[in-house]
Image 1: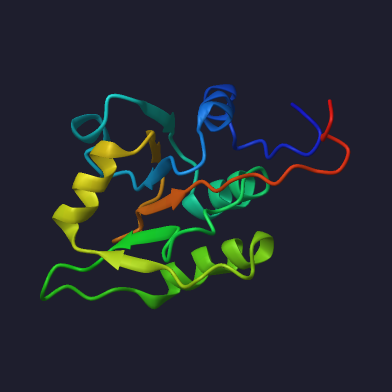
Image 2 (image 1 turned 180 degrees about the horizontal axis):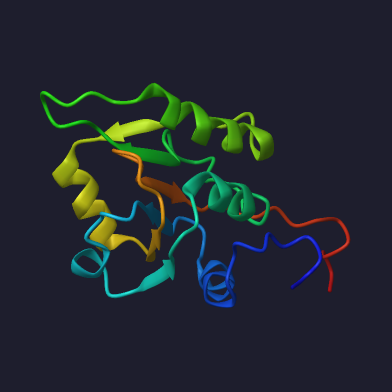
Length: 150
């Protein structure tokens, strides 16, 4: 365990987050998502809910401020309905860390899959809510005054 690091973030996930560059995307996928079929880099976070991972991850990295939509969720298939509580719960975690972030956008199912293929990593979670997948695009981490000139 490390001080200030959420216990839901495994050493493998921390390593992946560290290796991501600005503009790279991370998919937090629900338990039913075809992660291994989508991406060669998959990290397991079985039993862990996406809101907990959002809280831990967004404490360590900022979303991309150079794009209109740094947070993307899957749009429902025609005939399906969304549970609005899912997005509200995710938004609560986003706002805790990055309240100035734009609204979460929605991608059509197959566009979401295509984006997942190009993502830096897919994290397979224990999330079981319908349409619970979310993509986060990592931003440029601003240098602190202390780190300049070192």
